[in-house]
Length: 120
Image (cartoon, rainbow, N blue to C red):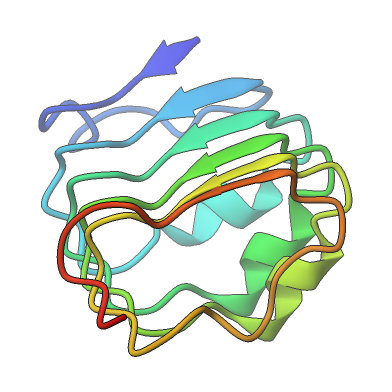
């Protein structure tokens, strides 16, 4: 696991072959472009940032099984998220979604929308 949480992202080298990546608590407003190139990722934690949108390149992470997007500023998910065929757990709580997100991967078994600012 590569832990770049709590501000450790700044100044860190770009990981080349990580399977588990923690970018939580980095005050990110956008996802670093290199994240979309990490085809080996199975677990990605982007929680507790300030992300308002996600790039379509997220759809390239086809091995991703768990994605934590909780505690951000998201109101929608990119269409490419449906390409995450291995995704089984999607954590979206405490985001200002106006409703249940339209674009969801077909195999997601657990979607956590339980807490916070969700509008429904």
